[in-house]
Image 1 (tube, rainbow, N blue to C red):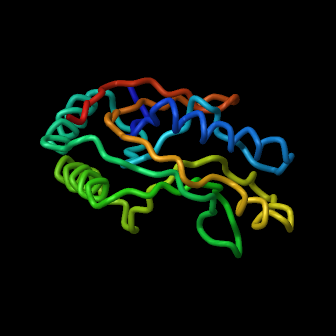
Image 2: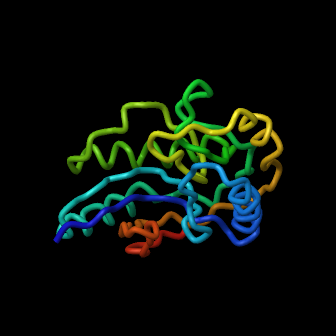
Length: 185
């Protein structure tokens, strides 16, 4: 059986409410964007893509090793932005500011993934929460940059869990199932 897997940080309730509120404000603008569902708000650390289900235990074990000795990490929701850049925005995101502990955890996961046969991402890690993706063949309206300048910023939270998620795609959007949860203590 084939499953889609990724490792991410779920948002604690206070940060989730703020991010979901910003997402609701943006949805009301009518932009040509496939918005993430409120339940899909998270910070991705490593996307594995489609793998055979028998690899799930190996990935879960790698995650346990990567998280050893890691403590809960303070983070702050930053402002909104886009990927890959302002010339042709494709992804709308909410930045996340964190100290070097998050980079260390992500690097451990990236290196652990490489050791079990998953190539590294190949580009620098930029912590963020994806809010939506611009629909194929569409562009954002001319005022998108000014609108995004009014989004987010300032909510501090403590990330205390790392999760191995299974992602199931459907016409109404992806649904995520927790396959392993690692508490940071």
